[in-house]
Length: 66
Image 1 (spheres, rainbow, N blue to C red):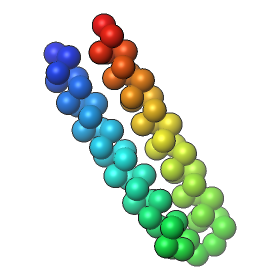
Image 2: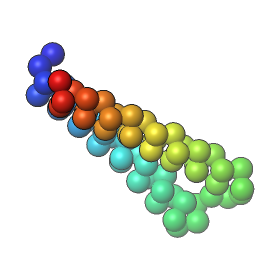
Image 3: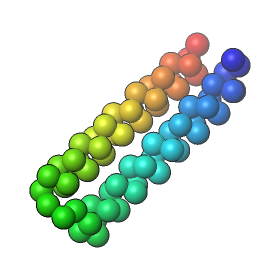
């Protein structure tokens, strides 16, 4: 896979991660959680998505340097 193709794939994945993160964040922001368990679960989802996005961005930087 070429660098450009890799970057396109990584960018598409990052956009999907960001969309999912925004949807969960919006759900929290409008008070969509019915209890603390749901709130905690959603916060965990956001943390996981943020970690995945950071890992993806780090990989993208490594590919750019090579």
